[in-house]
Image (tube, rainbow, N blue to C red; front, side):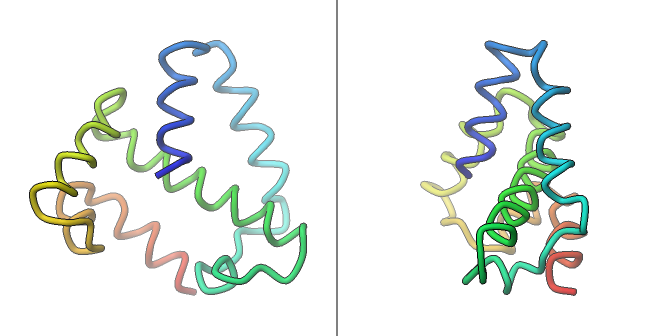
Length: 104
């Protein structure tokens, strides 16, 4: 969620830097993105930074649907139905592939 908030803020206030930001995350994940399980307890700074790149890619999936309305949409979902994986995947179908990839 924090990456979605940050990415949404950059998209609305510093849109010209989005390519630069994507480039930074891309370089941090040059060896591939770690699994979500590895991100739960990273074994060092390299893994921790690669996990942040994984979460950034998840934020991109979330913002692809609603753009600048994403955080508001997720907040409403949380109040209405809670934030379960099923709820998020239902409203953000692209997240299913991201989650599946993260479990490999």
